[in-house]
Image (cartoon, rainbow, N blue to C red; front, side, top):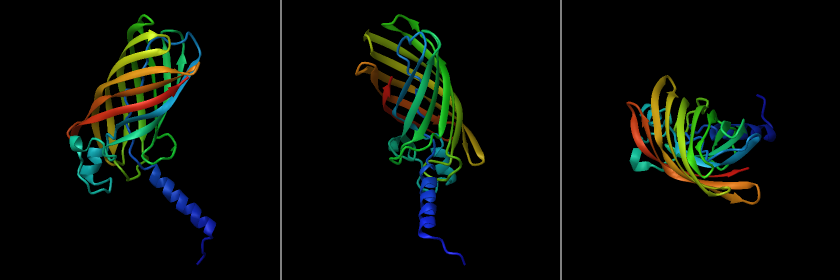
Length: 246
């Protein structure tokens, strides 16, 4: 029998650890787009940070036992349980076609374990605005998809495919300072092994943007959502987040 070298053993152990790390079910971050006013007439901007959301596959995984936890779904009694709620990395690029129309492309990655993981989900959408630079409304539509690749771990396995509409009500008292209220409504199809369920996720977030140096900015968000996996469960979802932008 051929024996493995210590180096091969370490490589296999690292591969197994990474397989477990990417096994967390997707965290559904919302609202995906939080636009607070007009954008530049051209060019691109970027942002990145950490935001929270529900694992929409959690109630199905708990019922079927596919998450291997043996723990019943907690619902409103366990809003911060990492089997149904988590934080995620959020990175995006916004392409400004003109002051009105912008395109958003982004990627998310799990943060349950404190390591930067490969993105498990992608999203893309469009936004515009109506009003003035100081006061107005900025609607957006987004499509997105995410998966944990069928690995049976925390809150999953699960994959989602869906769309979201949001509309930011913004107030900018001075340049580069903005306050907004962003209600959102999303419809998703959730896949867990051989099952498929429709999920609604809706709510609102309060957003505050302030300058960070001459060109950068920082954004804080907080609020609540309601996740409803039809025929399965409905529960409250805390929303918190912080992002850097340029």
